[in-house]
Image (cartoon, rainbow, N blue to C red; front, side):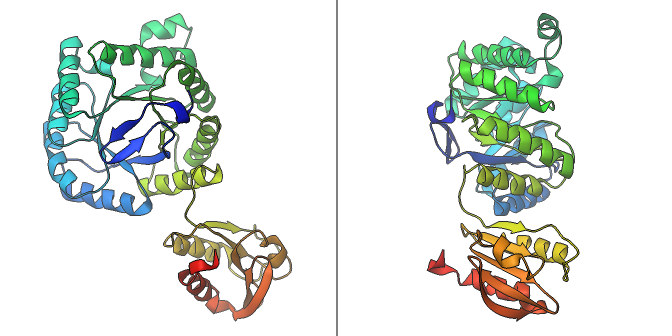
Length: 353
């Protein structure tokens, strides 16, 4: 089932499934009990473009902190619960817009039924989460190891547990740090269910390795029409997850808006600090909600030609640079004014795009 045909699910004021835009999710790494720190980080994530936020709820204090956190944020909040059904119920009662549980470890059928009843009363979705690292022993034995087929069977078994309790307001998440196994699992699952899917590569790693693994995995999955929400899981500042997720979606043509910065690799002709300039342009460009492409080129020899597919760009020289639009040189600029002139152009872009 492709995202065009998945069920429509409401998470707070956001809507996923049924062909709605893919939403970007991240997770706080603060102690949820620390309301001030958690709210501060959520505001940073909101500003970066996060559309759904997940917070861990390991204690009753954390569950009750959600009430105050919710008062101070504008994105839907997902409570991440493990093992204790009482924390799930408390999180729901304190305003969680969705809960993430593994029905197999929440404490038995009666306790699962109590959680489902609380969710049903408020009509909030349950995200059924399965991770390859915690696959049941019987499924590992059945499939002779951890496999895509086993991950899918585990997830659907847990979905059926909730369906048997009369509730179908669900999102499914299946994750693995093995990129190709994760891709295959999503392909199998999409053929077997019409529930919306949250997609990500778990334990992907640090900024470099995590971005590479997530980009490959998410691209292979999303490009098949699979996936309704995504997270790029990185060991680092969660704001970096949002930057990467937005770029992945834009690169796949699944989201418009936001400036795309392209820059050339440095070479012996480069006479300016191109690396620093490109990074400054990327940071500056993030402030402007323009659906355009900006080029940062290292030299005036090939710069205009290489930047012709960009809407606007700059190219360095010796002590001066060029302002370029659609491959045409507009004017020469002193080197120390390149960034300021480019930003002024973006501020006044208006109807030029």
